[in-house]
Length: 210
Image 1 (cartoon, rainbow, N blue to C red):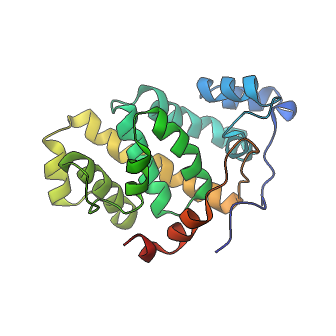
Image 2 (image 1 turned 30 degrees about the vertical axis):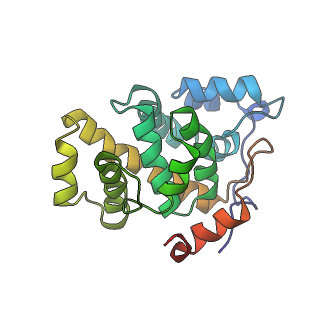
């Protein structure tokens, strides 16, 4: 299976951002500022994914407004968001997305053990009923484009209407990004630790997680 290492679309670095591109990336101010503040010292994680999209400024502006909501004004907790994002990126085998969100997941309160367990899915031992339901919802959406009835019934006992909507759109946002990162073959930034070989093997051969 090809890795996301040889880009099909070269990321646009901040030194090449014109006023149109800057306007587009400003739809997600936190991402813009993080990249601008860190790219020259090699610490701008996510710059290559963002830079690939910015080759199409109009689309990027529209998508980043959506992504900004998911990242900054989501009604779900950061931990819940990262649980969902890590699962969809794992199921979609997006190394770039997964490795970015391992860092963010740890910051959001997920443990290293939980991040490993995400790879096994909702049936892994150790999840409480809500976390298992969230992982199952991510699987349902990726595999069937719908949260299944029993999963919905469970989650509706713990999340309000806005949160249920955000569950669907959080998975959808990072489903689209996984497609983009894999299709564009977005390369890792030098500051992003490569995926360990055993983790990559499990990602590309799901039977190894059983």
